[in-house]
Length: 612
Image (tube, rainbow, N blue to C red; front, side, top):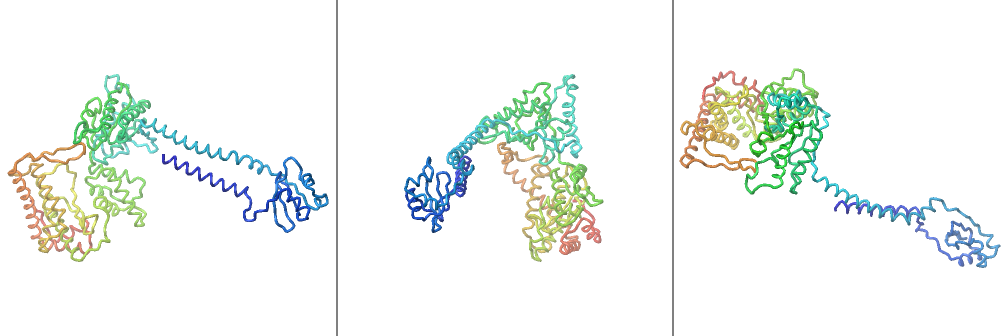
């Protein structure tokens, strides 16, 4: 309706502009309005000799008087001017003294004078009605298309294959069979094999679920339809089911094809779970998806790929065999895979000769493929800002820190005292980590503020770890307490800079007791049952399945772990006060110590790592 009123407004504005234009073209000059005379007055003026020239344009008379003034008059339509004036008694001699000029009216003025007053209103009215009907037609089309799915077909301008997907070896092996079926279905059907109708891609965000789905279609060379599950759901009940039918019908018509549904948990969540009841529209959409997956014929060459970050909240009916038959897990990449991913994302970027991407991969444990792509892009942006022509190792290292912690805040003004406290705090973390056997090596120590951190110590494992032992956790706890212990030993006081360390240490110590069963007194047990309310899609409640006496024992064990870690940190720092001071002074001077610089500072002290 708002658009309709807007169209009418502009139509009226257009009409006013046209009126002004034609009034300017055809109108008379209002500044010097000529005197209007009747035929009798004109005859009287001619008789008195006051008229010089009469210009005849059709029935209009333009008169030029003796005093150079102008006048206008109109003659009779069917009678000549001379005859009319004679009838009014004008003598022939007087009439001969007046110059008569006959001007033929131009064709444009003639037709404009006839057509514009007649057709212009009709044109404007027709234009307004056209706008109204067009608006109504658009509304009707939207009503008819409301149940159509917003299904998009990839045009493969940039064709993606399995070669463009680094890592994910097992996932690619699972999907190779899908490619083989789409290319050679007869080989499977002759053996009585039933091809999977749906394949669920599961993994953390950024691990490449959409990318590997596109690669599957690229390898198969078949149409690739993709849609987000959230696009099925509308405020009107039944629209989601209609769009689901339309999406599956479109894919079947283009068979062989791949239909990719991203974030399927938006409509595939478990029915009847959570507070406040269900959602009729979402559940109807899910029911329609289940029906469509069951409706495939045995030889239908349409594969449904779906992606989700939360397979644990999906409805069991969606995961049963015959619907989503296979579940392909996409893990975060390991060291080798991260190096390969970095190589892929370095294509099209100018790197410095001899750059070592493996060193970058070592500094990125826990990064997903999307994180690594962002890292390379941040490195390129940083290089451009510095006016360099090639991306160097230093820019990539700094990009890692920017992705993890945020940009440097060198403009943040801190006092000399705060800088000293930060230097001893970070030096305490680094020194404790370096003096513990089995601790992760220190790669960098900095007192430059990044994000919300006043400084940071970067510790990275030598190799990929899937499992961690109790000794490793205790080592991590001692390193976390190193900053707090260093402040207390050096200044006899503590600052708020250790608050985040204390929070993380407390959370880790409580997990050792309640989740990992690593408490000697409580034994190999877990405590607390987590309830997931699926309508929110996250953990919001924990059931307390132990007594108050056990709760007190848990608190004592958590305190024991923290106290033991603090004691270890204090013992190391007391035994190496000179080394701590040397590291702190170096940080105050240089602000950042790379791995070689840090261990170079400690080398003269010959610190022997101790076991915790």
